[in-house]
Image (spheres, rainbow, N blue to C red):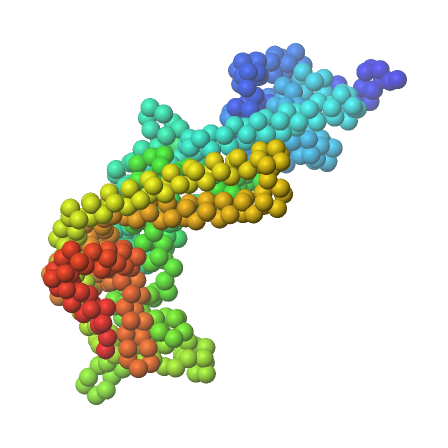
Length: 570
C-alpha cells in the first residue's frame, strides 16, 4: 500500500489554503452537548489550524440550534456561497456529524460538489483530509460513520415522535405558539390559557358572524380599524419568532377569519397533529388528514360555547353572498330555499317605473334548467313579513308556556304517577329475576335427566321470550319515570332563545341567524318556516299535551298560540 509520503508526492507544500471553520450544534445531540459544544469545537479547530502552517482562516461559520438532517442552515448557506465565490477553498469541521447527519446529502457534497470546486475537506477527529489523503473520503470507515450518523438521527426522530404523540394523546400542548387568543401557561408550558388581548378580537369575530355579518365584511372592519392580524400580533409578542415558511401578510384575510371561526381549540378542546414533517430528512410540513387529528376534549378554558360553534358551522355551510350595492348579506341569505328542490333562492331587484320590487326565485330554475324546477317567485317583503310574524308568535309562546311548565313540574299528581310507575317497575324487576333463575336451572335439570332435550328447548325459548319482554317493559318504565321526574325545564333552548328576544318590530339578519333554521317557499305562495331548536319545541308541545288533564284551561291558551305560530303562511 502507498504510504502517506508517497501519496503526497507532487503536492505543492507551499500552497496556502483559505479556510472556513464550520461548527454546528442541535438539541438532537443530547448528552453529548458538553463535548460537542460550540466552544469546544472552536477550540479544537483553532488548535488544528495553529499546528498547520498551510491553513489560513477566512471566516468561522456557526449554526447553533440547527439540525444536521438537512443543509438549509443560515451559516452553512453563507459558507457554500463563499465556497462558490472562491473566497474559501477549504472546509474544516470537528467530525462528520458536525457537518451533517444526512448520508445522501453528505455523499453528494463529498463526492460531487467538493471535487468539482476543488475544495479541500478536513474532519479533524475522523482523520479525513481530501487533499493529503483522498481515499479517506471514500473508505469504509468514513461511509460507516456517515451511515451511523444518519441512523442516529432516524432513531432520535422515531423516539421524539413517539413521545410527542403520547403527550398529545394526554392533552398536553406541545406547540411552539398557542392559537391566536391563547398563550402558554407561564407555570406550565404544556397548558394554554386565554390571552385576553387577542381573545377580545376572537369573541368579536364570533359575535359579528353570528350577528349576520359576512366574513368579507368582518375583514373590512378589522382592517379599517387597524387591528393587527394574528401573524403581526405573534411577531409583536415574540420578536424572535422565526417563521418556517410562507406566513400570512400584515392584513386580515377571509382565510384568516374563517380559520378562527372553525378552530375547535376555541371550545376548549386540544386539537393537535394537524401538520407533520415529511421525514427526519425533509423538514417540510404537510397537512394531516382530519381523521388522524389528535383531539382531547375540555383541556382548557373555552372562548366559544359548543352551541355557538355548532351555529357557526351551520352558517358556514349555507350559500351566502353579499349584496353588490350594500356590501351586506341580505336578511334571509342562505336561509330561504325552494320548497320543492330544497336549493337556495336568488334575490333580485326589479324597477317598474318609479317603484322598486325585491323578489326571490328558485336557483335551480335559473341555473340548472326550467325542466328541473319551477320559478317559485315571491316578493321579498311578503316572505320577510311572514318570518317576522312567525318570530313574534313564538316569542309569545315561549313567554306563555314557561309558567305552565313550572306548574306541571310541581304537580303532586305527577309525583304520585312517578311513584306508581316505580312500584310497577319494581314488581316487574322481581319477575325478571325469577325468570333469570328458572333459565339458569334448566340446564342442570336437563343434565340430570329430569327433562328431555325437547322440553329443555321449549322451556328455554319460553323463558327467553319472557325475559326479553320484561326487560323491554322495565326500560320503557324507567324512561317514563325519568321523563316525569325531569319534566321540561324553563332552561329549554327554545324558551331561552325566544323569551330573551324583546321588542321585535323589524326583521334583522341577527334575528334570523339566532332563531330560524330554514324558510321554504312553495309554488302556491305557501311558506313553511322551520324554527331553530325544533326538537326542544316538539318536546314542549308533547309534554304539555301529555299533561293536558292537569291544566286544561291554561293549556288551551298555549294551544291557541301554538296553532297560530305553526300556521303562519301566505
